[in-house]
Image (cartoon, rainbow, N blue to C red):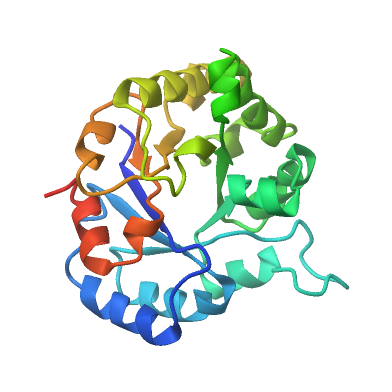
Length: 252
């Protein structure tokens, strides 16, 4: 049985005061972690505050939005996976469509980062997407699974069991237009089938697949009702604590 997973992605938003207010508001309001696992993916400047909070609240996990594929060295401006693991970060988001688009991250680079995250005892959230143009040309399925295959090259079956896959169609991110439940299930099913082809059914049954793209408290229930969807990755709707609380409770 896969535990549902809700990961709020703050992106490059909020101030230190707003982070404090957010954490104060959600205290005692998130679901039992045995029933629903919750995490926040924050900018690196907030990870110290977030990990300190999580040490005293089992209802929330800390996630980084990115990291480099080397533990240390002359890489000015990059985030060390070894350092954030030492801080208490549990998850690292990799290959988000915004990273691919604006910072030209390749599948090969993301594969290196996946291995670095795993070697430091954290869990990668590997994001993959499709464009509206690809969907219109009926080639979206290849577009969705290819980044998954490339990101997992050289990753053992034992490590693959731990990973989270984030399906985020780029045309739905920040647009207010979410994919339908049927569209989401179609893509997530194919991702699971791809993992089964790579590692076998035992691994594919354990891997959690989450959806991101204009998720909110109104559509989360429908999205979570799909059999191959194990969670959601809300962006804008995770910035307000009241909205995030509703999403973690599937809209209630």
